[in-house]
Length: 312
Length: 264
Ligand SMILES: Nc1ncnc2c1ncn2[C@@H]1O[C@H](COP(=O)(O)OP(=O)(O)OP(=O)(O)O)[C@@H](O)[C@H]1O
Ligand SMILES: [Mg+2]
Image (cartoon, rainbow over all chains, first blue to last red):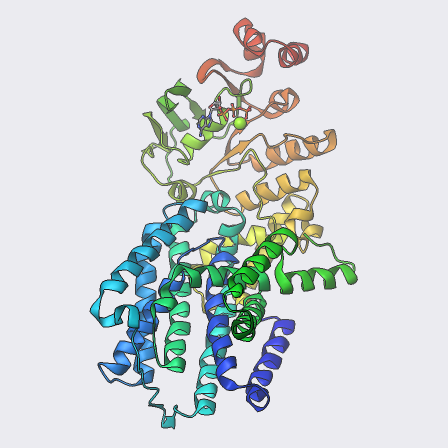
């Protein structure tokens, strides 16, 4: 981690620890779940150059699996989170293996198609509760802490988020992350230097799916249910929007994007009702047309211009 | 790491009856190419002759429709492209192939870091790559880019990017280099610099290069193969090829005039 990122990371962590004194913790937890989801997605889109268009399937699979482990098998929240995360990673391995053989738009379409296929399986499967969803997932307790208390759950969620976020940024800056960037920058050249690029893409895909799964399991624990909404393509679209709005290929961009989108949705849904999706659509168009680098990306570019560095 | 075999056969690369068809269009038509170990071998020919396609076949970026390719006596017709690189045959691309948003130093390190065996280690600190810096700087110095090390590759002038590509390729210490128009679009000074560079790195190596600039071809190449409409039109040294009426006819126009004007 370079110094600037370390400072931002610690400052962010301090803010999170203090946040519940001023903000309703459930809202912050929801933001954190989506932020983690977006960070996982950004590892693929921003650092490997892969647009997965069915990423909600990993979020939702883990939510269902965690819910099932907690509610039906009664193994408690920690086991639920662990099994859910592993399940999402495993599904990531399957979908990733099929999708990475194709490039660009075909890759995106295969991920979408497979996610839709899983969606229809989940609608029929008995363990998901179909249209009703999997309700009544008890928070229980973890490490002897009673999670039914919002504040207690809050610090557990912050702990998971901080650890996963650290792992993602570590990955980005690792030797593996360097290889991913090479693939993003010039795949053909990376092959010509002797890299078996498909294996790197697959590992990135599995990591991303597993972390998206972690976000899904935490979300299921937070709200006590897993529903078809978690695996719907809408949710896949939302994570693309969050990442683009915040700034893809930046460490903090997805967090900022998720914060803005989740807050807007929460604030606006009682005021404008179904117009929310229209507003989201407008934000998306705005991002694509004039705000290409996203909030963090544009901020960094502005800062660089001010100190007289070149911007690309 | 390149896997060097100590075969002393005169030809490092041999193709027999190499054919590539794109939906009925024959881009490469029965090419028998023999590249002698240690040579700088030029592959020339008019636009669309199939030179780049040949490179793609040789390095397995495209599967051939028919024919075989042997590298160092080994049949590589069915190998994967990354395997070819590890065997010691590394290519460059016609369009500049740097990693644009990585620094110049990082560009070279990408080629070096595979040797550490940590390319899958997502939990390791990026600082573990710093041990490669010295070697990377030495390679950059070899192509005269040491002062650019911290620059983002996209900011470099075109000619320097080609030099960076060569440094990155050399990082793998390949036995054989395939260069696709390394001097394309360059001014005189850059052409001279890259030409010298190729001559320098050709020691102990074999180079196959596509080149339009006849000054470069006549200046540094030991052998020439002329390709036209996918087939070999002529082969030999510069004097015999440039005097060949079939070649002159195939070029028709400026390049032919240049070829004749510079013929010895
Ligand atoms: N993927 C492809 N699909 C269809 N046709 C192709 C493909 N690649 C090349 N061709 C065709 O094959 C022919 C040979 O192309 P190639 O790029 O090998 O020529 P070249 O000798 O490298 O030319 P230049 O000097 O312009 O680089 C051209 O007519 C080209 O249009
Ligand atoms: Mg070409």
